[in-house]
Length: 80
Image (cartoon, rainbow, N blue to C red):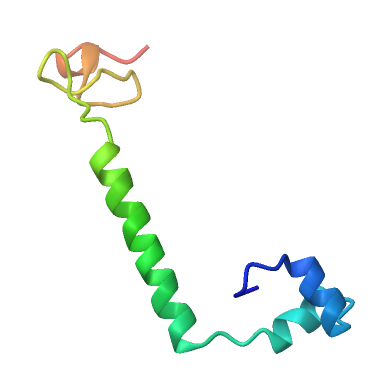
């Protein structure tokens, strides 16, 4: 796995028939955890930089008939 070999191939090489047995012998090290955190951090940084900035065209929240503070209910009209 760490060398880029598919899980199924590693299982066959190790003689493990079930995923549970593979998981038992696939011990996670501190180095594995550190590398995973670096990858996730890099991914999140890219996503944040690429995320579109969404803002209302009218400068107010979108109106939703289920939201009591919006639409007709905000103007004092009764719910149907």
